[in-house]
Length: 193
Image (cartoon, rainbow, N blue to C red; front, side):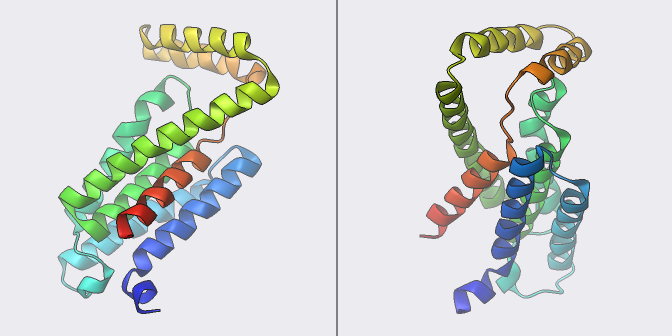
């Protein structure tokens, strides 16, 4: 019980990530009513630490680490969003996670955790995508879409997003909030054991 109380920010962000992943899996969208408060409350926790208003049990980061964590979360997913590879809700979900992790762990540990958890989420997302392709048996169609997306990366960003929007109705979408959540939760569990 003492571990739970001492690490309540981690429990909070984990619960928020689970809620976001469930909604994303259900509606293929992570709503603003969840992501914006998540980002802002992470920054608020960092600001409270900066002002010395909370004890060390809520983390050792500050507002600058929280802002840096949100910025890193944005930077990791924005390129994929810019070419139409994922929704803005996934990017904001990542920013919220980054804000809370930065506020809890600080600069060096927080940014490292965000990066490692993201890398794990990419691997989990790849495995889930391959599983979806295998179950549906549409390997050639997915290969053609992948070639087109990679080709779009070398065109103008606006053109890439437009082409992605045209492909989207005929694609089977992976709600990326699920791999992000699984990656972050897995990494946090391993990090604390």
